[in-house]
Length: 234
Image (cartoon, rainbow, N blue to C red; front, top):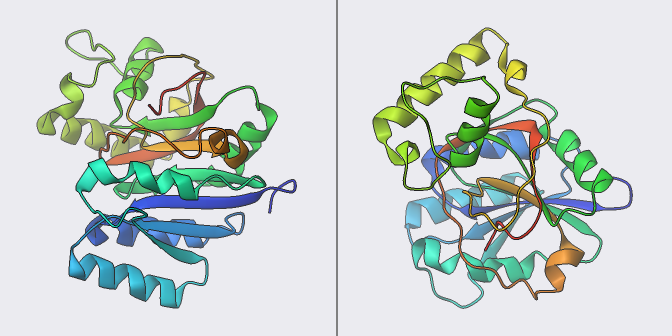
């Protein structure tokens, strides 16, 4: 609990090759009351992995596809109906997030509570189109050509993504990643890759959990830099 709110992390799962890195970071944080794994796969090995994790970690709660239909990214939207509790704050983490900044949950939840006027809040994410654009605009990262904040730009290029992560790992190794913090940035009515978002259950309850499905990319989260003004989830 944090300021009378239950803190619930959730992940549309689940590729175990990535989640084996993510799950320990989530369950180890005392601020997280529950970790919902949205079982959105037919891979038997991945399902068995999640079932074993649920047996071993009391925080983990398995939620199966509400419509009984598993169809990759197209069947994720139905899970949001299970993330609408009045007294809860939800933190969605894509299943291929590999690293969270220390103190990630406390920083993001505190910011969420301090700014109830925003429908959703998002951290800075490495390998995310708008985060990459912000890093460019703030002179944290330079490219040979101008990077536009669009889904179909270089962010989908495997070579570009590899170079971006290598650049970030150099920051991580030298413990200088906090230099990437870029302040508060707001926008509305703009689609973005929701690698991680935070919302009030009471806000989503107004829509009965009805949202369109998100775009996923392998990413890394820093905790203090981005928030969304309107409906970026849709």
